[in-house]
Image 1 (cartoon, helix red, strand yellow):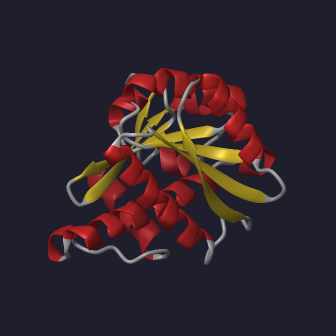
Image 2 (cartoon, one colour):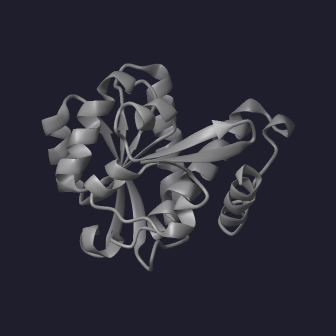
Length: 200
């Protein structure tokens, strides 16, 4: 099943961005490639949300990129993902809707809810460095009816976030916290659930 899932993810990404072997490129290019792959997966997962159209605002898909201000690694991930998402959103659509990224420096649950509503966010992507705030972010996502995603599995397993895009060598594993996803107002297609590690 894991091999099938890995193959499925590669096929999904191949239609949007080329998949390079990280070991074969310079570190900076490898990071950009990782961000492009991550951005493609974020939009692909949103395209499998049957409730996306109900949660989208003004026919647009906005992804709020949440990061820890002052944390160099978190800010770097924010910059890479925002750049990759906006570049991808400029040349493709999600369920026939334009996609864009919006940045937000996390402070607390209330300001995150307000930022998500102001941006009309359909998804929140949580950068590294915010593990200690995962539960607050999860609560905010549920209040704002916004699907939460992260690259850190612990945020999904223990923090209550919805979807994990977890690096596993040159592949990405999907970890889905199904109760969290449903509480955030999303309804992911069974095709995605079959290819993920699902926490029920």
